[in-house]
Length: 268
Length: 340
Image (cartoon, rainbow over all chains, first blue to last red; front, top):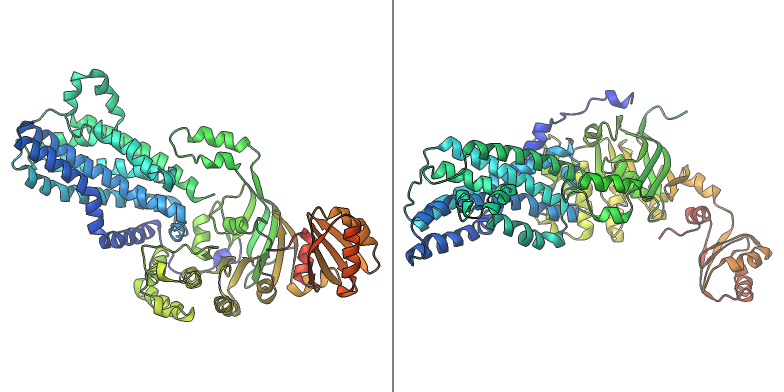
């Protein structure tokens, strides 16, 4: 540690610079794949919108009020699932093929690589939501009580919700093997969607009290209820303070577990 | 004692991987992870390195020679911060691999055993982005990428997807990637495995040139010719231990004299050792599973006598191989195994 340590090393990048370079890489790769990305993350929400927000009301099976409950839920689903998938899917493949190595050799803490993935997941979640919102509104027609006037609340729920699910995506991406991807979709995403207050407001679950409290372990509930509270404040919804607190807590928890798991997978 | 300017120095380096059963359930499922790790630590585990002491000087082209499973990849993994040592120390380019991993990464370039390019990027982008991770401005990165692609003979593949590159071309791309940030020390883990002779020569030529420029190069290989032709010094490792370290010529001088006659038998060779060693002209005979290694000072003349010895001991000879004294015979005398 004597002679070599004092050598002058050319422009050592800080962690911030490495993070930025990693983000540029992901932005470029994702821009190329934008059509696939949108198809993958928004087709399902839009099909739901078409059936439950357009066809069923048209057939008079559900009332128009249902659209107002459904809209924020669909948005939450697009936001959450695309955040999660855009972290999990590439990571499972990269770990399996060792293709992450050139980034793990970057001169920064391994955590920078993982945190950049979370940041990218947030951006992709927001992009999906921004795409689904106007299209869903177009398909469903006018929605009672829908307002964009609570911009700060909407943004807070959207960013925190995307962060929660990106961090969860990191945890899953480091924990599962390529063979288990299908399992994740059926065993984790399925229940998360159906018991995530996506298709009905949480207050409605008062009809089945056990379920009302059981679903609180599902992070999707907070994203859906948070968007309900900020997009259609006149409709029944969970308190925004509780929603934001839960999302901050869950983000912290998933980040801690995800980063630890990522480090374990990266360094043998 | 010790080199003044050690580029790499390891002290009593040990690595024990968790037992395979505990490795199969990676700690990620959820909070149960910590409990799993605690239980795994108590299991015996797989010993990959058993107290390795190495010292590599600045500017040296150093070869790590050993059969598969000898601990070469683990050694390179630890020195490149990708594997955490169980105990012991390793200092690379003046920085500790565990405590100052970021500093180490800043100063090294790594060529992996199997090409692992970023498949979402084309060949040139692989280089330019890797440079960006090291804070190199785009203009410089582009110029260096062009130069490296040219030098490694894949200039026409710059805009190709990496999947369209052959295995050899991908490996040369990995070499370019390891060089684009101009590291002080270059690590290569069996860089020419899977390359055709032409690709192998191209890689050797680049390594020689880098070596002439004073770059420190640490390379693992199980190719004797590669080790012999390229290395300033070689370390022979097996079962995670250092068996010998010296210049190739000095190592060869240590090889047991005479010709090595290897007989492949249809069963345990130990039964034949006694008769074989008693033959005039055989100064050493050893058994390694179904292989009998006899060192003869009369070349191949002893073959008929050895075959008779085998038959008298109830064995049939299935194959015979002769090797003149070389790194290979030294290696076999030290490890009882062939390299491949």
